[in-house]
Each structure stands twice: as structure tokens, then as C-alpha cells.
Length: 306
Ligand code: CP
Ligand code: NVA
Image (cartoon, rainbow, N blue to C red):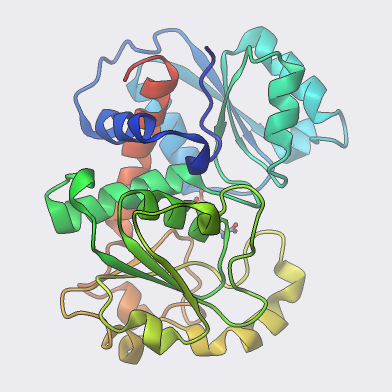
């Protein structure tokens, strides 16, 4: 059966456990020998493009990049026809897309002949979540993702696509997640990758008080106040989210050993200050390191390893 990696909540525990372990175990550099992966980006990227192309290369394959200006998804050509075309030449497509619903349309259009990997959509960022779990496991459990239960993660700021995938992945591992966001920026109910639909074992708490959320946290996580596609709202977002900046006074409420995480790119002086981002508590570069581990795990699983 064709394997897809579209959202964490579509994968069972065994699959996720395989992906975590395939991400960090020795691999065969001929796993993808001579095989291409189509990398389709409707939005800009540094880490995701770099980690995807290098992971494909490490596994012996090659990546071809397609930018939005070239393919014009649903403008120059329908998403269905893009998928049909790609499936004639590639068996895997990894996509960063504006609308999560495009994945279902592409699956249907290609009769499941093309494996799809989500490299960020409006609803989720699952490869980032895999990298983040690996980073937290390194920090608190010697790399063992099964030993994270009971940790406290506080997410502060705009509840984004990154928040959704991260929360789903952590709750499934028994990590307690608190999301602190002002009205209008909190996790919405329903839709793809919905943390509020996860039935434990971790507990999810929503609040509009950043201080309360961070008190006693092991991990403080934040993301951009202005995600891609929301640029026109920059001024109002800065105003609305001003009390949700991760700065030294906020970090001081967390546990002494607490770490700061951010998917990057960071907007220094908005959601996080330089003092915190560049401090000894910051693990953002370890997260970047694990973006490639995560892609290796996902690609090996797509190719049939478990
Ligand atoms: N974190 C992340 O996905 O970064 P890019 O947008 O640069 O790929
Ligand atoms: N929430 C951000 C994540 C970037 C990696 C965005 O969608 O722009």
C-alpha cells in the first residue's frame, strides 16, 4: 500500500515509533538509489528545502525542486493535473502547500500511485514535529522518545500549523501541552491535525495567560506571530500578541533546566528576544539538525522500512 506522511494524527503509534527510530538509526545509502523525489514549494523555505534535499541525497536518491512561480498550483494547472504529471516520473512528492485539502485531491487524482509528504500546510507541519520530538528526547531522555511522558511543554504565541502538529505528536507520547494565546489566536477546534481531538495520554490545556503556561515548564516553544500568508495582518498581530513574547522574564518562570524551542525562521524582537534565542537555554540549532534526521526517518518509512 502506498504510504503517505501528511499529518501526525493520520499515523498510528507503531508507524510514528518506526519513523522516530528510522530517523536516528544507521541507514543504507542505497535505499533510494536512482530514485527521484519531487519537492514542490508554494511558499518560501530554507530548513525544509535543505533538509529534504540532503536527506534524499543521503539515501542515494535525487531531488528536483519546483517553485510556485513555475507550477502555479491551481492557477496555471489544477493540483490534480500537477499530481498526475509528477506521478508519471516520480514515486514520491514532498509538498509545502497553502491549502491542506490539496493532499486529498492529489491522492485521489493519482489513485494512490504517488506517495505524498507534507512539508507544511496551513494546518500542519509534521516533519517539524518529528524533529522537535527528537530534540526533546535528546534533551530529557537520552534520545528515547518513549520516555517523555510527564514532561510539561508550554507553547506561547500564535497557535499555528507548527503548534498543531507538535501538540498532536507530544500528547500521543504522554507529554502535557499548554498553549497560551490571546483570543483569536488560540487553537481552533476541528480540521486537520486537531490536538483537541487527541485522546491522551498527555493532557492539553489552553489559556490566555503566558505566565501561567510557562510556570514549571520543561520546554517553552514559540513560532512566528506572522505566519506565511498573514503578512497583511502584521501590525494588528504585533499589537495583539505583544504580551506573548518569549523574553528573559517569561523564561525565568519556567523550570531552571527549561529549554527554548522555535521552528525558525525567528523574528527577533517579536515572538522571541535575542537574549533568549541566543542563550544557553536555546535548542533551536539542535531542532534544525534534526530536520534532516526527521526527513531520513520519513523517507525510509515511505520506502517500506519499519
Ligand atoms: N522551520 C521551517 O520549516 O523552516 P523553513 O520555512 O525555512 O523551511
Ligand atoms: N507558522 C509558520 C511556520 C514556518 C516554518 C508559517 O506557517 O509561516
